[in-house]
Image (tube, rainbow, N blue to C red; front, top):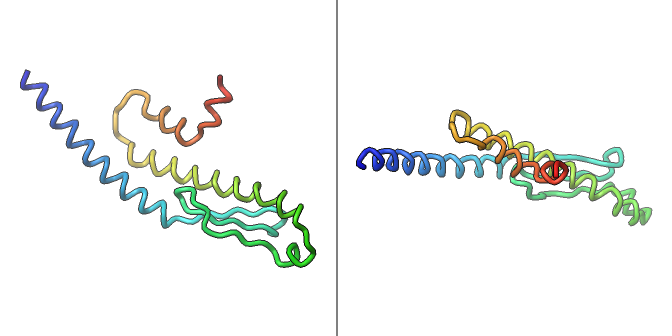
Length: 123
């Protein structure tokens, strides 16, 4: 009975350490920058490692020519590329802090969280 309490204490200690690591990773990801562009650089999007879009730059010539439709076509592609890069950064960061933890199914769970569309394609 008391042996189980020691295991529980160890598990709680690991959970606290993991929580601290998660906070550090989130802080690092918030400061990390990724960018993507479409239309030969006419639209540029910058995001952080958490997937928050920080900046959108639209080439002045598109605006001057009134190319609203082209902007509307290019913008989602640049945003999606930047968010995919941010998601990859997040996945790599999560993998780095869980490295060495021996929890069944953890790698698969992280992969699904990082790439939920992959899971839906498999069904």
